[in-house]
View 1 (tube, helix red, strand yellow):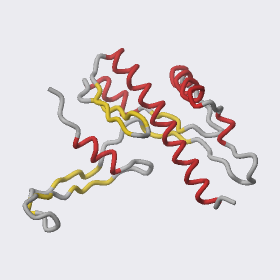
View 2: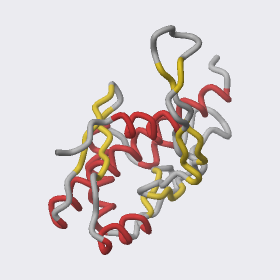
View 3: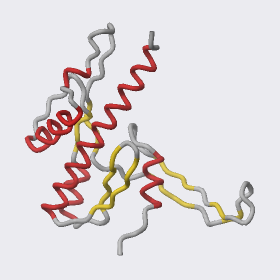
View 4: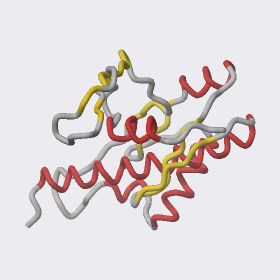
Length: 165
Protein backbone atom coordinates (compact mmCIF):
# COMPACT_ATOMS: atom_id res chain seq x y z
CA UNK A 1 0.00 0.00 0.00
CA UNK A 2 3.05 2.32 0.34
CA UNK A 3 4.07 4.26 -2.74
CA UNK A 4 7.25 2.70 -4.16
CA UNK A 5 9.01 6.07 -4.63
CA UNK A 6 8.26 7.08 -1.04
CA UNK A 7 9.58 3.77 0.28
CA UNK A 8 12.81 4.18 -1.70
CA UNK A 9 13.12 7.73 -0.31
CA UNK A 10 12.74 6.41 3.25
CA UNK A 11 15.26 3.65 2.64
CA UNK A 12 17.75 6.17 1.22
CA UNK A 13 17.27 8.40 4.27
CA UNK A 14 17.97 5.38 6.48
CA UNK A 15 21.10 4.63 4.47
CA UNK A 16 22.26 8.21 5.08
CA UNK A 17 21.66 7.76 8.80
CA UNK A 18 23.75 4.57 8.78
CA UNK A 19 26.51 6.33 6.82
CA UNK A 20 26.55 9.21 9.31
CA UNK A 21 26.83 6.78 12.21
CA UNK A 22 29.74 4.93 10.59
CA UNK A 23 31.47 8.20 9.74
CA UNK A 24 31.02 9.66 13.24
CA UNK A 25 32.48 6.54 14.89
CA UNK A 26 35.36 6.44 12.40
CA UNK A 27 36.12 10.14 13.03
CA UNK A 28 36.12 9.61 16.81
CA UNK A 29 38.66 6.81 16.45
CA UNK A 30 40.82 8.80 14.01
CA UNK A 31 40.73 11.88 16.27
CA UNK A 32 41.84 9.84 19.27
CA UNK A 33 44.70 8.26 17.32
CA UNK A 34 45.92 11.32 15.44
CA UNK A 35 45.26 13.94 18.11
CA UNK A 36 42.83 16.29 16.42
CA UNK A 37 39.70 17.68 17.99
CA UNK A 38 36.12 17.22 16.90
CA UNK A 39 33.04 19.39 17.22
CA UNK A 40 29.77 17.55 17.79
CA UNK A 41 26.37 18.57 16.57
CA UNK A 42 23.54 16.66 18.21
CA UNK A 43 20.31 16.14 16.33
CA UNK A 44 17.25 13.95 16.75
CA UNK A 45 18.88 11.67 14.16
CA UNK A 46 22.25 11.16 15.81
CA UNK A 47 25.45 13.06 16.39
CA UNK A 48 27.36 14.64 13.54
CA UNK A 49 31.11 15.07 14.01
CA UNK A 50 33.21 17.82 12.42
CA UNK A 51 36.94 18.39 12.80
CA UNK A 52 38.25 21.79 13.93
CA UNK A 53 41.62 21.86 12.24
CA UNK A 54 44.03 19.26 10.96
CA UNK A 55 47.73 18.99 10.27
CA UNK A 56 48.50 18.51 6.55
CA UNK A 57 49.03 14.72 6.82
CA UNK A 58 45.75 13.82 8.54
CA UNK A 59 43.91 16.41 6.42
CA UNK A 60 45.07 14.80 3.17
CA UNK A 61 44.19 11.33 4.47
CA UNK A 62 40.75 12.45 5.59
CA UNK A 63 39.99 14.29 2.36
CA UNK A 64 40.84 11.15 0.35
CA UNK A 65 38.86 8.79 2.59
CA UNK A 66 35.77 7.14 1.17
CA UNK A 67 33.20 5.62 3.50
CA UNK A 68 30.64 3.18 2.15
CA UNK A 69 26.97 4.07 2.31
CA UNK A 70 25.59 0.72 3.48
CA UNK A 71 23.54 -1.18 0.92
CA UNK A 72 22.53 -4.79 0.41
CA UNK A 73 25.52 -5.25 -1.92
CA UNK A 74 28.17 -3.37 0.09
CA UNK A 75 31.59 -4.98 0.28
CA UNK A 76 33.91 -3.31 2.80
CA UNK A 77 37.60 -3.94 2.24
CA UNK A 78 38.93 -1.71 5.05
CA UNK A 79 39.00 -3.79 8.25
CA UNK A 80 38.40 -0.81 10.56
CA UNK A 81 35.40 0.39 8.54
CA UNK A 82 34.06 -3.18 8.38
CA UNK A 83 34.23 -3.44 12.17
CA UNK A 84 32.60 -0.04 12.70
CA UNK A 85 29.86 -0.78 10.17
CA UNK A 86 29.24 -4.14 11.83
CA UNK A 87 28.82 -2.39 15.18
CA UNK A 88 26.41 0.18 13.69
CA UNK A 89 24.34 -2.50 11.97
CA UNK A 90 24.28 -4.61 15.13
CA UNK A 91 23.10 -1.63 17.20
CA UNK A 92 20.30 -1.18 14.65
CA UNK A 93 19.45 -4.88 14.72
CA UNK A 94 19.92 -5.35 10.97
CA UNK A 95 22.26 -6.88 8.42
CA UNK A 96 23.28 -5.48 5.03
CA UNK A 97 21.05 -8.08 3.39
CA UNK A 98 18.07 -6.48 5.14
CA UNK A 99 18.48 -3.44 2.87
CA UNK A 100 16.89 -5.52 0.11
CA UNK A 101 13.16 -5.49 0.68
CA UNK A 102 12.22 -9.02 -0.29
CA UNK A 103 8.52 -8.46 0.31
CA UNK A 104 8.34 -5.88 -2.50
CA UNK A 105 9.64 -6.66 -5.94
CA UNK A 106 12.37 -4.29 -7.28
CA UNK A 107 12.89 -2.50 -3.94
CA UNK A 108 16.54 -2.60 -2.96
CA UNK A 109 19.09 -0.01 -2.03
CA UNK A 110 22.60 -0.58 -3.22
CA UNK A 111 25.69 0.72 -1.55
CA UNK A 112 27.96 3.43 -2.85
CA UNK A 113 31.08 5.14 -1.56
CA UNK A 114 30.84 8.70 -0.31
CA UNK A 115 33.60 11.10 0.66
CA UNK A 116 34.26 11.36 4.39
CA UNK A 117 34.65 15.11 4.07
CA UNK A 118 33.14 17.63 1.73
CA UNK A 119 34.64 21.02 1.01
CA UNK A 120 32.15 23.38 -0.64
CA UNK A 121 33.21 24.87 -3.95
CA UNK A 122 32.96 28.61 -4.48
CA UNK A 123 31.96 29.42 -0.91
CA UNK A 124 31.24 33.11 -0.54
CA UNK A 125 29.27 35.22 1.91
CA UNK A 126 27.79 38.63 1.27
CA UNK A 127 28.22 41.62 3.54
CA UNK A 128 25.53 41.92 6.21
CA UNK A 129 22.60 44.06 5.15
CA UNK A 130 19.21 44.97 6.56
CA UNK A 131 16.78 42.08 6.46
CA UNK A 132 13.61 42.97 4.59
CA UNK A 133 11.63 40.12 6.20
CA UNK A 134 12.71 40.77 9.79
CA UNK A 135 13.00 44.52 10.49
CA UNK A 136 15.85 45.38 12.84
CA UNK A 137 17.81 42.27 11.90
CA UNK A 138 20.61 41.66 9.41
CA UNK A 139 20.98 39.05 6.69
CA UNK A 140 23.74 37.63 4.53
CA UNK A 141 23.70 35.44 1.47
CA UNK A 142 25.80 32.28 1.21
CA UNK A 143 26.73 30.89 -2.19
CA UNK A 144 28.38 27.53 -2.70
CA UNK A 145 28.25 24.24 -4.57
CA UNK A 146 28.22 20.83 -2.91
CA UNK A 147 28.85 17.41 -4.39
CA UNK A 148 25.94 15.05 -4.87
CA UNK A 149 24.78 13.46 -1.63
CA UNK A 150 25.89 16.42 0.49
CA UNK A 151 23.46 18.56 2.40
CA UNK A 152 23.49 22.34 2.56
CA UNK A 153 21.66 22.28 5.90
CA UNK A 154 24.59 20.45 7.50
CA UNK A 155 27.10 22.88 6.01
CA UNK A 156 25.16 25.81 7.42
CA UNK A 157 24.82 24.13 10.82
CA UNK A 158 28.58 23.52 10.83
CA UNK A 159 29.26 27.14 9.95
CA UNK A 160 27.04 28.20 12.85
CA UNK A 161 28.86 26.05 15.44
CA UNK A 162 30.81 28.21 17.88
CA UNK A 163 34.52 28.23 17.10
CA UNK A 164 36.89 26.26 19.30
CA UNK A 165 38.69 28.18 21.97
